[in-house]
Image 1: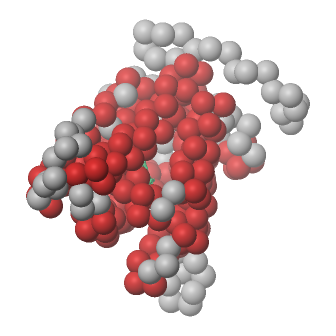
Image 2: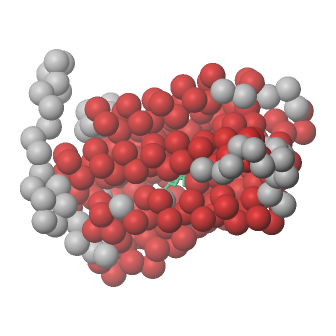
Length: 254
Ligand code: AHQ
């Protein structure tokens, strides 16, 4: 914790360093992700991860729409709206793009999931749902600058996407490489997003108390990602921990 009596904020350089230091809690280090990227995941664990992470992917444009609805700065909105298009895609002539959500479904079908069982969310565990819903609720109810700060877990995202691209083809040759297009696209998109989000964050959080708030916000979002992996590890198991049975659903799954 910073000393609240401090009257001098950290310099931009030191503030950015403090934000980047939080990366030690990024979900790249979670045992479930380590299992995935070290090639120890079973097909069921991979399918479970893809199906659960789909709930996060479809939440992103909802979350970003909440940011836009709270944001009164047109220049920020002009940049931020790109994030929604990245995920939902667009059919503007000459700029047609299926979007990241469609690419994620393609990842899912490449792992052997059906389109229907991905999109009907039947595999999404309560813990993943709660963590993702908490992120959306945060964006709906907090100042837009705080949601910009929360998106900065993507400071650490290019590394995790590149790790998947480097390891999955060797470890999981049964997944058609076409399914990995999402990760390829995300490396550059995340870099562009982070440049914009970091600039806003370094400008807005400009007192010792606000800078500490920024670190707390980033840790909230790191918890969201970590909790998703906790829930998937409980449901699908880890190399040294058995899987748990799914929670009985009130509605019969077709
Ligand atoms: O695919 C991801 C994505 O589109 C986003 C948007 C951003 C945000 O607004 O919070 N965060 C994020 C992330 C994506 N993928 C995660 C992964 O591990 O594949 C990483 C995640 C993030 O770092 O926040």
